[in-house]
Image (tube, rainbow, N blue to C red; front, side, top):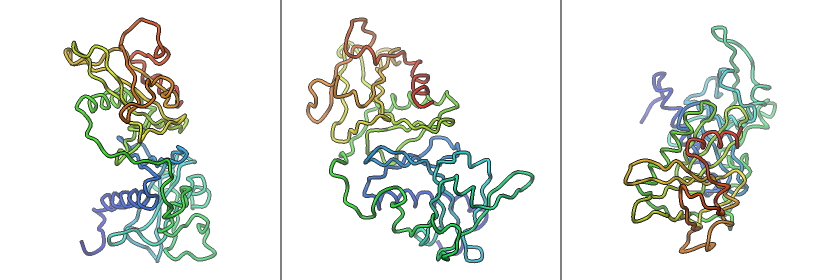
Length: 322
């Protein structure tokens, strides 16, 4: 495509900036940063998960497709900047890439340094920065060369992947697995205080990111769904070991799909990922953590403290991040 972006293409250019940004973070970090995108737009454009220590960065992306007076000009509604600890990332879309300089600033600092004005009676923050920043620029501490972007996310550019980071070979999900993930999304979506994110691509333990809109805490969830029928009344839950990374901020949710009745069992499991090694027997079998689950069993067992009613799941997860 040739020629400048037009006003009617502003939304499309913003999407281009975002996807180039996610690709750049993934490429420079060699997969040590994993991007989760929102299932609904509630202000945060992505969660960027640093796999080495489990930290989630909340990112708001603001791209521009042209310069004004040699600068990227930003005008952001104050109502869109509610998370002071999120990172605001801004830059320029150029042909086939991003511009040479990118702004990466905590929202708190952006609001402190930008000019507060108003438009139609509503407060807005406005500012500008150049691709060749001057030494007296107020934004100098928050500007970074595009080729060193991941430094602002705590990772050295072109560093080799951490020894313990193993990217598993992708596998196709079963239909029942997709149904289970969709059910967890549906249940959590009923809570308007939660914002849900999916990873792109899906390469790690967490298959769903849950952000609490007030506390700003994030929880990662892996969903495992097992099928139950007359031939398989006591299913085995299996979790791929090679990509499993236990963390205090990661939980496993297990659901049971009753094939003959085409519905989910009323019971589910909610397991802290750090407890998985305590219940998996044997520890690893054929590359998987495995444990048997008898949904609805009243017998005492090592899974009892993880058993919850399916419709309690939303409240339980909300309480973990609230």
